[in-house]
Length: 102
Image (tube, rainbow, N blue to C red):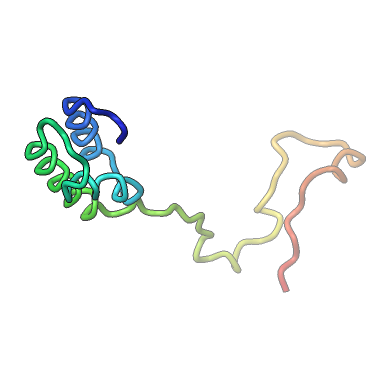
């Protein structure tokens, strides 16, 4: 943080407690260690230390994986992709088709 306003620093630390993640740690550590001199140094150092503990303990959000059904091999290939309406034979060549798995 490159501001001399301690109230802004406290507001940012409060927000980081709510939504911060591991990317915020390098910016919070100097405040928690007291490297930066502030008017309200003790108050900011305490808030930064508390914020740092919360941010470090926060688990990253789970990754979302697209899963295929467990019975994948039992599904007939024709059931994977279907047209929503009947199509002329000439146009059906443009449709996406499932690949044949060996």
